[in-house]
Image 1 (cartoon, rainbow, N blue to C red):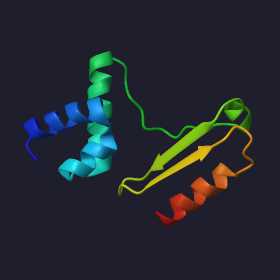
Image 2 (image 1 turned 120 degrees about the vertical axis):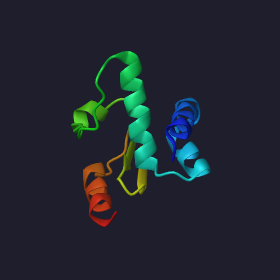
Image 3 (image 1 turned 60 degrees about the vertical axis):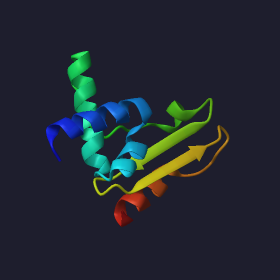
Image 4 (image 1 turned 45 degrees about the horizontal axis):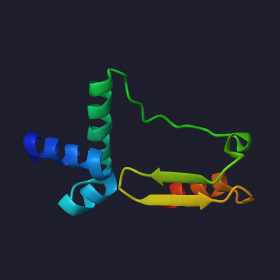
Length: 100
C-alpha cells in the first residue's frame, strides 16, 4: 500500500481505534498497530515499545480489569474481569498464545 494511504489509515486509527480501521480498510492489524505506535513515538519524542509487560495479582486489585492480547496474525483475546474475579488470566493468556 502506498505510504500516503498508510498515513491516512494511521490518522484514522488514532482517532477511531486500530482494530475497526484495520478491518474497514482490510489491512493487517499488527502492521497498522505498529505504524500507529511509531507515529505516536515520533510525535511525543518518546520511544515506543512492544515489550512484554508482566503484572502481579496485587497490581490488579481494586477495580475491574481488562486484558487485551493480540498476535502478529491478528488473533485477539479480550478478558474483562470484575474486581472479585478468581480467574487465572495467566493460564488463559498462555493457552491463547499456544493456539493462536
